Length: 258
Image (cartoon, rainbow, N blue to C red; front, side, top):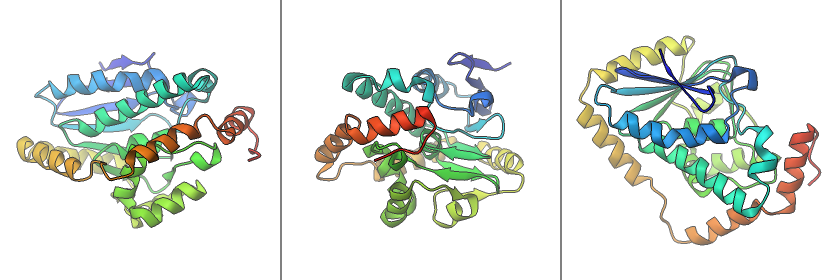
């Protein structure tokens, strides 16, 4: 029996190939503040469990994740302080998954948008069903994609493709996402492909895989000149008029007027 977290919206099943499941299909697996908060302690527990060799991130229902939970917008973005605290919570959740000393595979079917795409990009590998779609949509909300998330995206697809995705906010079909390097495989039977691949990894040297992950993560860690200024611009965007209008429009289910 799995462990239910974040008011039942996350489920963790341990074992050699452990499963972390977004379990709120009735809410299109929107990611709540409680879900982000649950990730660091859960990842710490997984890291301490020698029985776990691989982690699979998956979702119930037809949508991987529609992104942030719109029902929390009024609260989490109420003030600059609340916004900063929420953004730090998201970053901590993603960082915990990215730093987990186990290979983490995202198994994606359906739409994978916004915070859901950020969560998938925190994984080491992304396997997708043919009908999966991927999008990062700050331009539709008037907000700014974080430094860490932008760095992860650029590391995946390069600056040109990152510009296209962030400027347009369009959804990429799985085959295009594969072609540009955003994801790693497209599989007709994505669940079967992930299970087989995870079983293969579980049979290999945990030390070798853990070391490779640590080295690769170190190589792509942000630290370039100008980071502080870029972070300040990102923070300012959350207090700007565009995000205020984008948030209202999203809640009112209308097109924003920027």
